[in-house]
Length: 156
Image 1 (cartoon, rainbow, N blue to C red):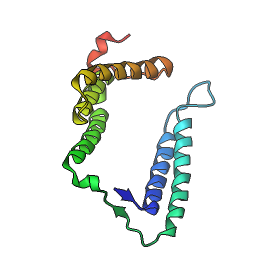
Image 2 (image 1 turned 135 degrees about the vertical axis):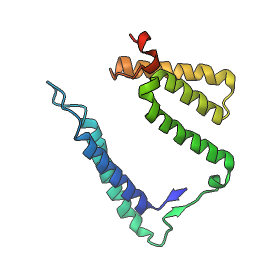
Image 3 (image 1 turned 120 degrees about the horizontal axis):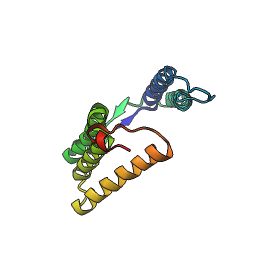
């Protein structure tokens, strides 16, 4: 699927403005000039500016269709894979607080590896390694608390 540049620019602008506006609701960090809202506001503003540029460049082809469907849309296996990725994102957003990051990550990665036909002997160890790596990166390096969910009694 290919979107017209004007439509892509408009969507990017709307999303950038929404990110910027939502980031303004984040609480300020005490004792620091840069709080949790700074980087989302920078990225939202940059995305809005890029959206304007993209929409402006799209006016060169006014007769181009708004949406052009590619060949993969007619292949059922590719549609299933697309649905699996969207479903994984929805599952994470809805369930991560209840079941926790670690369990959700293992379920999502395992399910996506099955959907994308990754060999089972690689899928399980890779899902575990990626989950541990993400936990280390966010929890230890970036100091971002991840929800433990069902594993709360094992939290350190």
